[in-house]
Image (cartoon, rainbow, N blue to C red; front, side):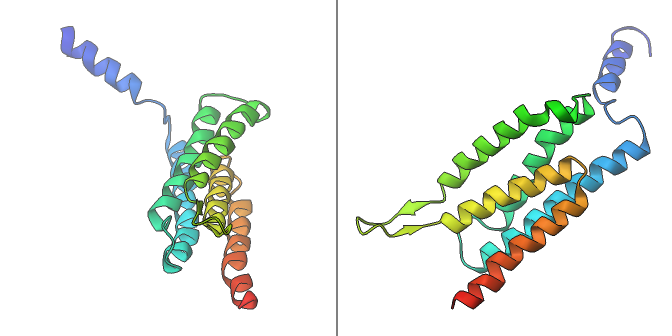
Length: 156
């Protein structure tokens, strides 16, 4: 492949060369898949409870959060410098969660706080997955599910 097509091929190949080996591919797939699954568990609980932000929303928040930390790490950012990225994720997710909160009337009847908190929690779980803290993400998910299910039943 010489000429212009060779150059196009070479450029495209270098653009998609951010996964250098099978070990890195496995690492990426593990972190992103786990973020999606764990976010989906909490999202499923919210959807089963009839809340607007359900399975897909929580899965996407977890995936997006994992990507926001995974990509800079892959690009060489030190974990110590990750605080700026984490601040942006937390702020952005706060904005998304605010959209789930509705004040229904002047009697201070507010709905959606728990869903907003679950979105924020799922973002943290996605961050943990993206940083390679899979066990912490699993424990956080279990705690989240206990809070959403067990404490809800005890309250009733």
